[in-house]
Length: 486
Ligand code: ADP
Ligand code: GLC
Image 1 (tube, rainbow, N blue to C red):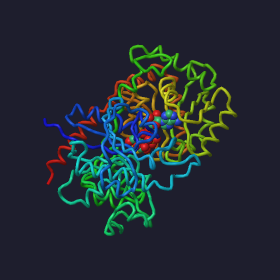
Image 2: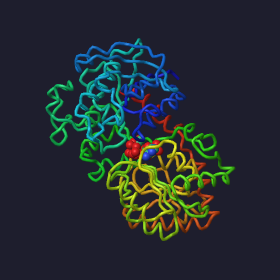
Image 3: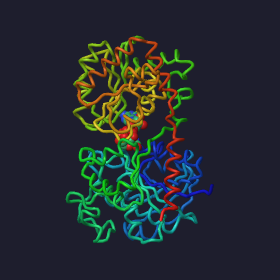
Image 4: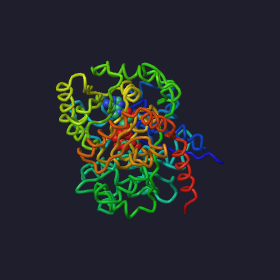
């Protein structure tokens, strides 16, 4: 099997820079692909946290087209950072900003995001054409809107170019930029129009990728079908239906080393399927940290999430009386919309000892919730894949999820058949309403009361394969197929 070289381009990669699951995927997939004979190098922007993690980098000049497009000084750094073969686009004027990569301290998007991510995509395209320090990829793989222009730039470079793949992690983020920036981001006039990159009076960087990539993937088979419908297509379903022949859904996996309860140093106590008694100390630790009553027998629900409309947690606030009446507990870690944050903080004040909420972003606490909760709630209105339910499966927290997108592909609902066959790993509910969520919470409470059944579900979840092995094989097949396609 010959080695195939792929340039992956994205704005996030765990552990260097992360706002969500995109970072987890971009950071973990390359090592799984190495097993399949795919050599991946990952291009990301030189945010301060990224530069701080690098030592021993080799430096190459910016590709001339990138200097010309941005008018700025910079360089491309190459280094292995924590096992990831990384190329870093260091243009301080664009990326030397602390905090959230997309928005300033006032929470508003940076006004020059179009220029910033056009520079990222252009660099990927130029490396695709001319290589970097003697290495030229056969495929450029762009992730989400921040990299969406890369396939478009390559499309306009003609036939002798690398093949391109566009992966959609979330269709809701279209990467809209003003139409009058077309020239500044170096798209030709013919790129405009609805058959091009135009999207409701703006340019969509994501649409650019979807329009021009040789292959489109998204992060679960169910989401791949949902985005073909007007309900799930976010205005791009027409384009996606037209390109359905090159669209596929490949489920995400998880980093089995970073998320392993038997070796996770972020936990109070380590455990595995054979030593589940130890898990109780993680539960007590979580209850203490969240200000909850230390009750070993209370059903403890966890949430680790961005607090946005997508994640449906406003419905959890509505369903809360059911959870409280069942004598259960809730531990929420998240940040996002002020209303939802305020709602959980108020719920905590109103239900001391039963509801705990920490607003903010804490990697370690995210692990502690997976290891200490009995069940993990994911009531998303839509979910391309979702990673927290996969972490929950591995950590023996039973996922209670909305039956949408990747959530429906990864959790086996505890219906009577599945319970009878001993294959259930969690609970699903549909339609995605506060009422059905409340009913699922009640159903979880009933199941929890039957401890042997609950333990069986935990064991099944922990035994399910959530690794990157299968998905990496599918990406490898897609890449190799693309190389032999006419
Ligand atoms: P999305 O990418 O849509 O936010 P995913 O489930 O794919 O959803 O990935 C979310 C990732 O971000 C997971 O790794 C999860 O643990 C992490 N995460 C979300 N919110 C927080 C938080 N407040 N603190 C720490 N980690 C978080
Ligand atoms: C997006 C999606 C999430 C997915 C993640 C990684 O942020 O919202 O469902 O798991 O990307 O692919």
